[in-house]
Image 1: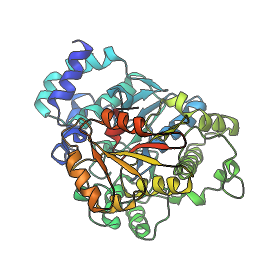
Image 2: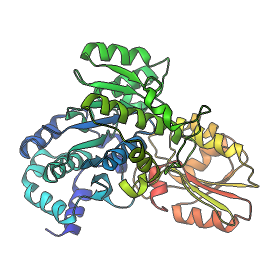
Image 3: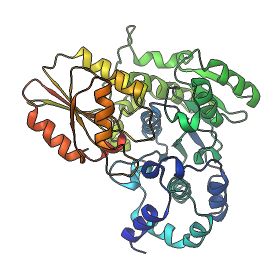
Image 4: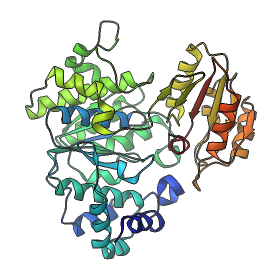
Length: 416
């Protein structure tokens, strides 16, 4: 099977949440367990760190992988979604899964795939597990897709579970309160395996305490892992040059560092300060991370950011409000299954808006977004294509202005 044919099968035959939304989400682990059985259980005997959370889990997963790689560990990395290439989701030491291996995987397992009928995400994770086994990784850093308890990745037996933070997102599937969302995320906490919580939050603390008691798991918070302090000055400023930019990344750095040091405690691995610093400063080259706070200075500045929920948009807006730009040109698009009232009310009131939509069925129509934006006091034109919106913003932008692209990972993916 040719690689192009394998990709066509993956994208055309398998239900994809990013494209279709809720209808593609499988609410149990039946399919992934059946797939793993057909593959000879590649999930077994795989040491891993399992990462969930509303925001930051992708960045934290990449940072952990970078630190492991810098310490000589052959490291599998599984994240989602991808921006340019499906294979971004599955890497070993920063190298994407081989095209020939992917093609042969689909060809070899076509019968099982047609019989089990997995989702796009289930198939992708099964491929990742198979690739990690083939590559004989020492361990893997694995990011959940959606939630935790019923996420396909939750068949692994982690050395350490990490939950970055809890905010409002996917409430139609995860619950209409922070406690309910936290309960779904807490599903990755496993029996007798330690768990690290990135952010202390009053609304969710008891959820995690109860789950850790039920599973006999040691519970830690990032601020309890004192080793992380050596990388920050007394005022919280990093004593390294962060590879990942953005106002929210310092929290992710602290969480990733705490997770790494906790992993070292658990396994007896010796952490090396210089190797850690190298990983923190070279994460992009080590892991190939994309889509998080791409900032380019020029006649006007350009910012691409994957902020797409209440917490992420708040960070972005607060940063914009602290800057001294003459005008803000804000290109935004969202998916249609997201509640936008709170998000739109957080966006800068004085920006010029370019409402658009990604080229996926799940995208909210740009005209409808313009209408909702106007109700929230946001003014601008609607564009059916992201690139047209970006071109219009660039044409309008002048010296001292800022052009922002945000609101949906899929909007960013079309221009990154």
